[in-house]
Image (cartoon, rainbow, N blue to C red; front, side, top):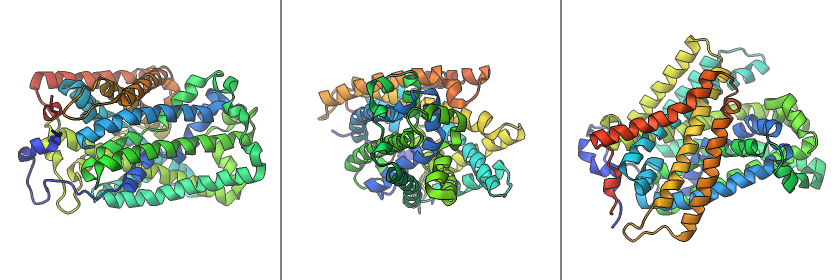
Length: 482
């Protein structure tokens, strides 16, 4: 027996207006999904924003090895997660995976937590896009409000998010080629100038890797992968989900790991392994812009600045799409208003969920502006930090779910999947602890109020548990053969 998709059970409860077809279009290939989920991780933004912090407060020259370790752990996570994604048809992401292994009630808590975390991350990216776009414009003598920059980004995201996902996938592919291409050119320029010395062996020596700050480096490494797991949300729109979802997830982890590890390793070589901590402390976010100016000229530095903004827009669009699909999955089980389960007749997109998510972005940006909050320190970094922590918690919960998954029908999680998921659970559990412990470093805020915000995550989860227990709603596990 196979698993019935949750949406199919409540099809009669969903609105049947002229713009709401019964099913989504199966139009995505592996490449489409790969570009969407890599865009959510925003590789260029992570390198420019978090790698200098990892150099400065982590294990310095050992940062490339931290990325490699995180990549191995997330590959282990992918082994089990893709097994569950294939069982559930690749719909519902973490919500379906938790239902598969842990049952209905925890699934509702996980579903609400996923919706909360992805909305926080999307709102944070909107604020960061406005902030950094304002800085780039100002660097070239153009003075505009961060609110205007964020509004343009949100409007463009609303336009593409409302339409066929393949349109967004093609746009994200174009943006990813530019984003990764400029850093490949920078990597090549560093390698050309320094030769083999651009890849210092010290970065992978045991003493450097295990040195002071390794926990902080691993924390930043894990948060830099956020979004790759969203492949499991697009099964209903994939031409061959059983093949495309695993390939996209494995491809994304390998691509992102190699990209982060190699580029950070070359940055160590360019700056010098004995000086990288000091330089990162003094330059922070300007570290890679300085490398761009030095190795590619002023034009190269400008291109990096522009690509930083396009990277954030790509992440905003990718996270917006993922959030919409969580909203649709919960609406199909009547955990949020059922009208949000509707699909557009022409585009096959969860268009009502897209409109609601856009409205949340608009309200969040407007409130931050009206309150006079610093767009980055008080708004974007806090929302991103909270969303990131929530997603890592969900990854750990999904790994636990796969570990506890028992045989259902003809499908069994083999020992490889179980062992891999156990390893992932240990690594991700440690990452959760590190992020909570260093939440002020993630957000850049010493505020005691901000420091207590992670408590919202268990509150959201418990609200979901209580709601499911009391009402009996949220029945994804009822579609699983026992």
